[in-house]
Image 1 (cartoon, rainbow, N blue to C red):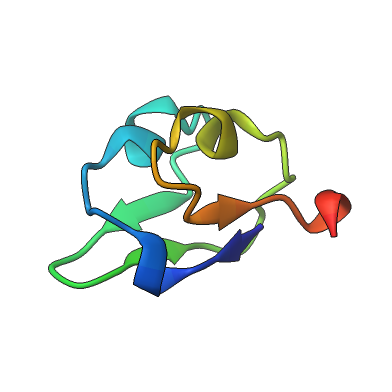
Image 2 (cartoon, rainbow, N blue to C red):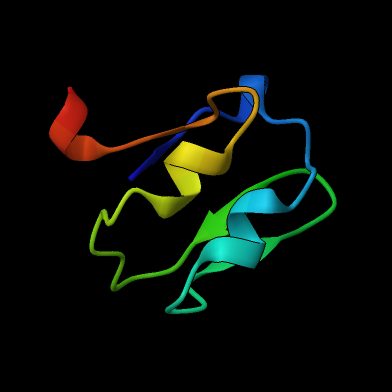
Length: 57
């Protein structure tokens, strides 16, 4: 998963849908922890397109 910090609105929607609890919302970014399987859940719920599946490139 690729994260575009400039596009992020820090809403936390992606963190809420990560079934593996690999996303963390901090004050100024989303941290994607090791082990992300690019399932796409976070990408689908992000209203600003800040998360992009590596498979989509």
